[in-house]
Image (tube, rainbow, N blue to C red):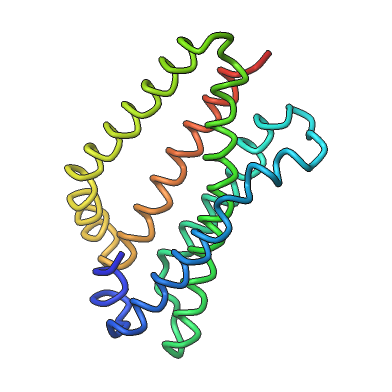
Length: 178
């Protein structure tokens, strides 16, 4: 993210630090509220937790992709747009993450089952981070060459990975039916 903002978008380090800090602080302050929000809202059509997996997926995809877009115009406007879209992406993703974790206790009848599901989730999350560490930069480079812009490569990469995450949330939605 730092490379994208400084080298490709052209922000100075102060602007980049401000965008990243504002996004992180808003995420840190709002993250503890998502469980309460989900529990206080009347359960939508597919259940209290499962619904958030589907409702927020299109928003996460759009917001995350737009947060990795090079906005043209004054630096201040561009920084505000990137900060806003990344903050909204975190905000909507936190609903998915919280509902995903809450579903573990809903679908597992025993503490042993909950422990197994939690460790399986953590294992796959770690494998995803390892896969990203090996494939992320080469994938962005290939996209940059294909589309003639390294900046556009970052934007498309964000969209592709957000869509893959959406597919995973859809699979999670289907697996927890009933």
